[in-house]
Image 1 (cartoon, one colour):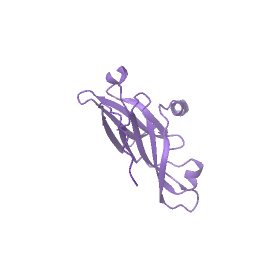
Image 2 (tube, rainbow, N blue to C red):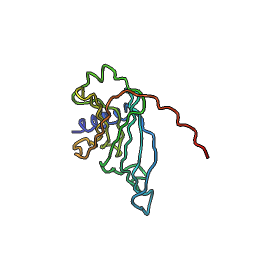
Image 3 (cartoon, rainbow, N blue to C red):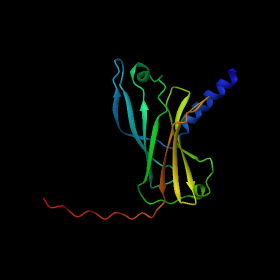
Image 4 (cartoon, one colour):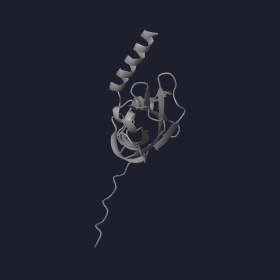
Length: 168
């Protein structure tokens, strides 16, 4: 039993260092006042797909406040949402075109001290020429069915023309 727990902890520690993409915080809203420590929040973050230039994903997730949240020992709720958009020209690598049916990991973030993480997995739907991003939360022993998806149709990208100067 001790060996299995040690293996799980080592795997989690290694996985946190191998996160495929890094998110940038866009902003947050406070949703629950806490007497001790920071308030509970909904955090908005963005990240670019590390293998496909021209796709940016935006995540919203719950962050526990209070004393436990301040010292980093709280378990955040598994609730999260994702919206991905084409933000430039997209060229799909062969690895993506021949993608796995169980998807490719593109983002991972710990949402508890040790046992829980939020993950984003990318799928490619050849028939519809569309990238699909799934966000979900998992735990070492039991994950959550809470999830959200976003689809990005792969289209030609035209550089937008500059808007004419407005007259004051």
